[in-house]
Length: 195
Image (cartoon, rainbow, N blue to C red; front, side):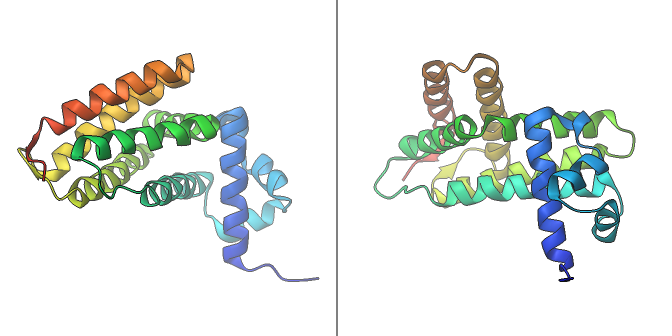
C-alpha cells in the first residue's frame, strides 16, 4: 500500500472540507463527512489535524490564498487610481460569481467562529487576512492617502463585503457593478495624491 504524505492528506482534507461547506453548509462538514469526501479514513483526519476547528482555520487560509492569487494576476498598468480600485472590486465580484459557494462558505465559517466559544479568534484572523491583502493592494497603488493604509484597507474590505452580500442575496450583476463603481469613487476620494 502506498503511503500518503501528511501534506498530501492535509491538502485533500482542506479541499474536501471547502467543497462540503460550499455545497451544503458548515453543519454538513463533520469530520466523517470530510474524510468520506476526501476518500480517506477517519484516522487520516486525526493524523493531520488535532480538531475540526483546526481544519476550518486551514480552510479559511486556503480560500484567502486563492483570492490573493487571483488579485495578483489582475493587470493594473496604465490605469488611473480609480480604475485600479474599481478593477479590484470587479475582480472580487468575478471570483464571487464564478464560485458563489466558496464565498458563502467564508461568510458561514466566520459566523460559525463568532458563535462558537473559543473559536472567535478565527473570525478575527479571517478579517486580519482580508485587511492584509487589501492593505498590500492599497500600498501597491503608490498613491498617498489621507488615512493610514490599514484604515483604507479596512474600508475597502467593508465595502467589498457589502457588495458581496448583496450579490449573494440578489445575483444582480448590474447592481453589484454600480455599487463597485461608487465604492471605488468613495475610496479614491481618500487619496491625497492619486499619482
